[in-house]
Length: 266
Image (cartoon, rainbow, N blue to C red):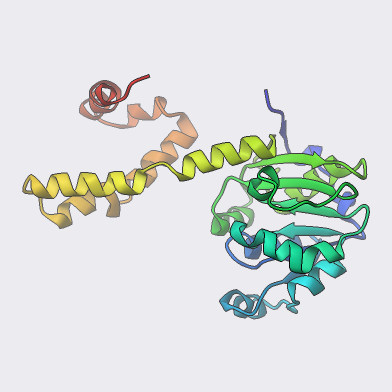
């Protein structure tokens, strides 16, 4: 069983005197960079010249190239898109690595599938938020934080776990709790969830109801635009998947718990 860690288990002192490079100012990068800064961490930001570079400058960062940011840092957060990691690593980041440096990922894909090789002399860790990028910032500002899966894949320094937890705390994740995992487990769960057919299921339901004579506006209001599904998901998060059914009508309970089961095998 995995172990949870919370604020009291992490110490920001392990980031004292260190420079953290946020490489990529996109979906996760912006939120993590701002959270780290607000937690008192010395942060540098690196990004290519694109629309995210403009946002970084608007946020007040003295923007660097990815290579220059990585060269200044002891801890490098690989937060560009997953598909870009091999190129970013080979062209810019690998040449800046020194023994004792830390390479941190928010998703295990490129390490698990051996798309890049950090070598044996550096720490390789993962802090993988279970939260959309904007939510990483929003929940930090709200004071409640968000959960993450964490992992030490390679501990060259003997201090990788402490740094991993310190980063988790600095971005606000240990407020809610981080769970010890592995690169393999995180990739398996993440890809499984991301490949589920929810988007197309919504389209199928829409088409079936419209073909049955319902107006498109009424269908989309009920299934999507009302926000009822969001509230239902929140009840599931806070109360549990089955306990939340008590917030629905008995007709809805029958539909979810009895009728829909016909369509799924074990």
